[in-house]
Image 1 (tube, one colour):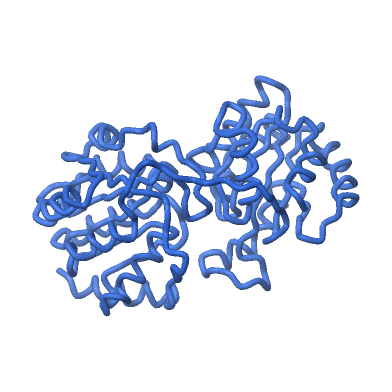
Image 2 (image 1 turned 180 degrees about the vertical axis):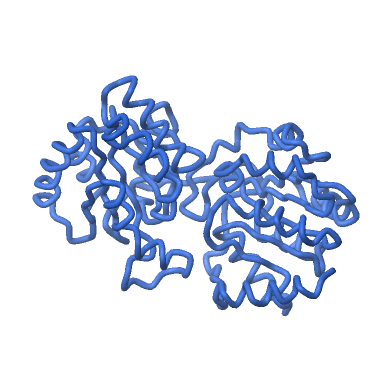
Length: 377
């Protein structure tokens, strides 16, 4: 269904409505439409995480009385459970919300392993949270949608929430949106330089294209994957995984290759890292100011000073680089450093069109990685 028609039927207020979300590739037609028609504004906020979205939506409703819209990938359902159950639910404040959710890992549809279980439990989770569901696919008719909206409108008036769960190809948009920034370094080249300097050090890589590129770099170098833990799911948690390893392997250097969207999603992790100050941890945030792995929509990282943030969180040293000469120098210094270090690397948006995915399973990654760690003192 064309996104314009979907919004016309489901959101009669059209552009007067409030949208907030975390981008999803399955919802790219919606995301591109919002950027194209509304942009980033008080009426459309790309939030740090999905729970953040729910709270923003509640604030919108409380101040206007109008029903907000929250969009997300189903992998973010875990982040909304608390505010949905303890804030929105009609046994608490009864704040209505329309959720639009991309369905990754749909049963019977081939997808990446990190989406498999989440996909299985998506509908059940929503129903357990007392959220009524309509599934949108490429065959959903306008009449069916209109009929469902009569039911949904009644529920929303009662202070309940509803959800449209969108299958692959369920929504379409013909508009073209280009995402770019003014940075020049390519993320894959940045990761390759980190790999070259790190040698046999431990590397924890964040969700999305970062882990995919790290895997392919190892393949191109004919290197084993045992040095790397690929955080293929659980966006925003790679730095905490790295902290847990660094504290328990104090004689081994640990590199965390993070992204700006991931770092923003659970920014409190940086405060915890700064409090413990593991001398063997190097936290690298590749900042392309975008949620590139799910389409390229912007994060708020363009207006954020990561260096000041890291310093405020207690990192003894934090630097920002925007060229390969400075990156090489900084990485070599980090290799010899005896204190916690934060490195922001400013990167362009973009990746190879033929970028592949890991050919080993997460379980095999875990086994090889743990076997390597067990050999270290």
